[in-house]
Length: 172
Image (cartoon, rainbow, N blue to C red; front, side):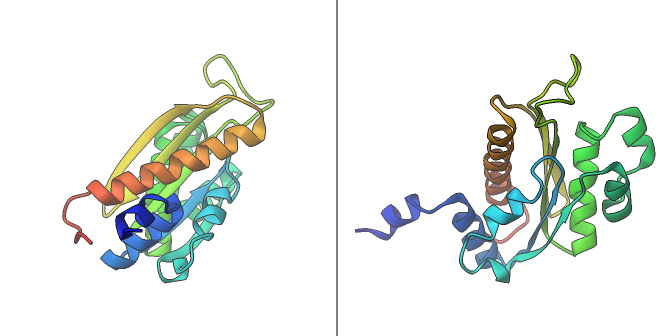
């Protein structure tokens, strides 16, 4: 069996860990709707203790402001489930943890809490890598658990793609 074949069967969390270790980079998480599932999934990878700094579960607006520096004006005007909130969560987590990378999730997992403007299943995922931030607006379907797990999968895919494509970081 070739090493390429083995690499193709790696879990996403193992791929992320391997690349971050090779590049001597660190990662942190900031989660609202996923409630720690992104961190818990990353921690499944052996060797992750070399790259994972810490995680923030900031379910309330107060926690987002206190631990991540999300601006109160953003929460009041855009809401907790918004592109700007997700962006500020990722930036704030990286800053507070002193990490090179951060991934943040904020959304409405349901079954209640949705509106016409922000329906159940709406999740914003932000990824910060070495000063670059991308935010993706996602819509997931299913029950609460299905939405949360879909958000975790997407968050890790975004993190993986961003650490592979961000310029000015050493390649493995």
